[in-house]
View 1 (spheres, rainbow, N blue to C red):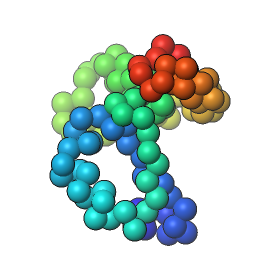
View 2: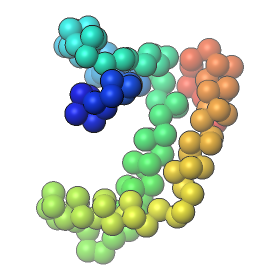
View 3: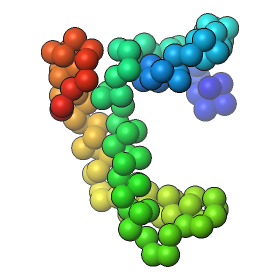
View 4: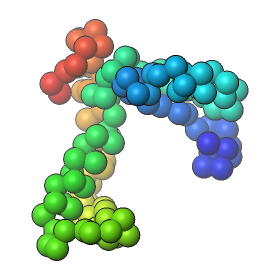
Length: 115
C-alpha cells in the first residue's frame, strides 16, 4: 500500500467473502491496520465491487480468443490485449453505476441484490 499510495490516501477494500474473512486474513488486517485505511464493506457483498464486472468482461473476451492462451505469459498477453479492447467509456459507465448499486444494497440491508 505504501508503494502504490505513498501519499497515505489509499484504502484497502475487500468483499468480506469467506476466504477474505478467515482468521488468518482478519489477524493480518488487524496487525497492519496502522499501515492503511480499511474500507468496511457489508459481509459477503461483492455487489459493490466493479472489479467483478471487469473480470467477467475480460473472461468473455479471452474465452473467445483463438487459439486459447496455453501459458501464463499467453494469458497475461491476452488479458492485456483484452483490456485495451474495452470500448471507450466502459469503465466510466461502471463507476457511474455505483450510486445505483449502493442504493440497491442499502434497500436490501446488505443482502445480495439485482442491480
